[in-house]
Image (cartoon, rainbow, N blue to C red):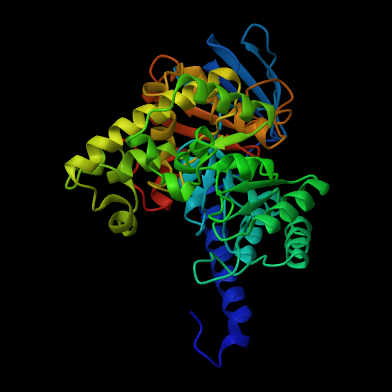
Length: 456
């Protein structure tokens, strides 16, 4: 991307882009972030705490310095005189959502994520300079946005390698882990061109520092089972993950859509399930990506993602207008998707952690589609489906003592909805306000700031 002779100027170009982006996020913050009291009382809402199927009616949440100090009925809670009282009567309060496969490549995602009730994202591969500035601006400088956890993109040699951070020798692998760790990254993301011996070093060095190895099954590694045995803690994308069902074959031999043609036996499913449990493996299926990718040619995306028309106009061409596949291919993919979700549902019920992530297929909204698909095709209950985007990712990232459910002492990461998602999972789409980092926002001004259509 850099013309010969200008290579030395690249850091200047990168720094200029970071400055421009953070200035834009500062503008969003100044326009949207209001001065609020240290103590806030959310009064009259129904609470879905993320722990049980019980909806607690007509509750008060007392928030102090961004944490839930107390929770109970109005008769039980004494509201301090200096508290800012926000009436949420008739609304439903639930834990803020997590997108565990985000790529937040521009600051416009900050207001959009919050508008949709997403209070935490795992950025699964981004430019280091921008990603760290984006994260730190929110975490340390009070800028508007969800909490951002970073996974550091790492690939091997060759023209198929992704990004500029490459690990081709053991020394480079150690240096990469050190670099990401020192910058506060939580994970090392493994990509397709990493060689097996390098994967082992990356995973081992990451584990020494208390961080995890996540991402794709590299082509040279062969199979999800092999990648896990080499040290990977979390795997992304169902087509790669489920190669664990056929450990004698490589992902290349299977292809990503092998379940379209092949149904594994109950024994194969049980063996894979037990293997994943034994290795404490976390799965990030990005199933909404498959739902949308294999729509029949000419089918509007709104048939499966009803809010797609609300995204910013500049995103339409890449996100809304997709080529689709032939009717025959779509029919086979539907069979494969059904098999995939049945297996993932079985894994979940056995205790394998499943986390919801979008890979930005339709920004923000495809997280709802992901969760809905777990319920409709994976046969999860609404609560179980919600937990794939709340407490399960919080546990996966070692943050469940701080967030992921609505409990006294935890961070006040709260999505405020018009309707109860325990009654119908599609009610997740009725988010009308959000609270995070001690700040309450109404959704529509956030949508409008990101050039998305406001909720009607």
